[in-house]
Image (tube, rainbow, N blue to C red; front, side, top):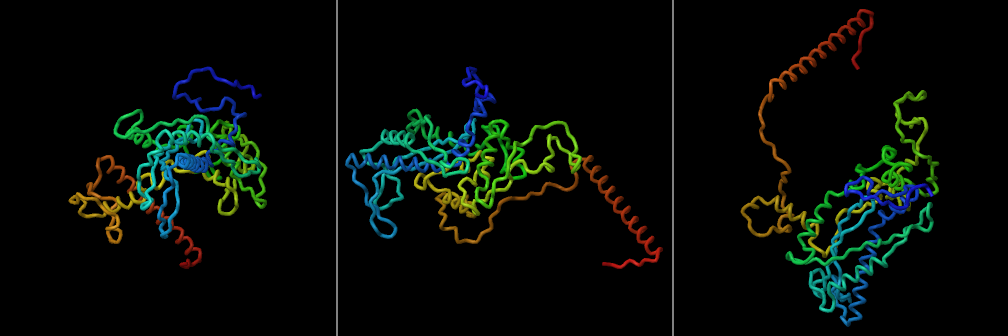
Length: 406
């Protein structure tokens, strides 16, 4: 309906700039995409719950009894005999949608030590976990909270592209543990570069530099984040928004405020082009307020790497072990393991840097000449200032006015 083709028959190179761009920007639902990014974490939580419930139901059908687990308060609690631990990495696609790469491990349950990693029961294996993932991806869904622009909310669910591959340990099989470790390590520096956008947190002063409801795909996504994340309470009535004028032209000077600009309309005299008031999640009950906070991430506010507590060692233990290792004076002579608990109570000095003597004087004759010239000019300015001040004081005394020190 907008005169754009509905299909593209051109073969593009992997680094083509048009990849990830909608065929018609006016038909594309940018609001739905940023809302999906914002609530993708909730969808993942529901998906993992669906996986564990599917496995628990399967264990019950196969006659595998639940496990009695001793809780910290001394009571016994029935729990399913299998559970799933995960490690998950998030990555932006070229079109600006977040997608996940998850590592899922099927564990059993130790009744005396619930935190221990034990193999699953003999009746459930990798094939059952694969079926549970496919079933969860097909049935897990979520409806976002109501919004003034869409009272029924937006549906949040997975797409059709779900790739499940078993991981083998020891270098055998299609996907090995070393391949996965190297594959996930690269996401430590991933951000929105794949979409062509790279900026720090966007504020009310910089929103017009990045958002444009008539611009490219990324600019419209940022505009959708800022518009949907506006304050929605009655005391924050929506300001009338007009199309921002970001088309640059020749530089001219506004006849009213005398401010130079390259925009067709002076931004100071025309007023705000959009509602620039920041939404503060703590002051109103607005689940979409965080869209403005994470507008530079196209609505996604989660961490690039998350994991279950039982999947592997926690980040807190790793940080404590590194601190203890650095604070230990005899770490070069200690071949055994470093225990964090043995060093937490000590008062030590943590060295975060070191200074070494580099030399005295200037490296080259040119550097010395520049420094001496700058010093001579500074002395000349000080001398001229003193002479001018003395001349002003002398003129005042000659006119009969005695200066009084403040």
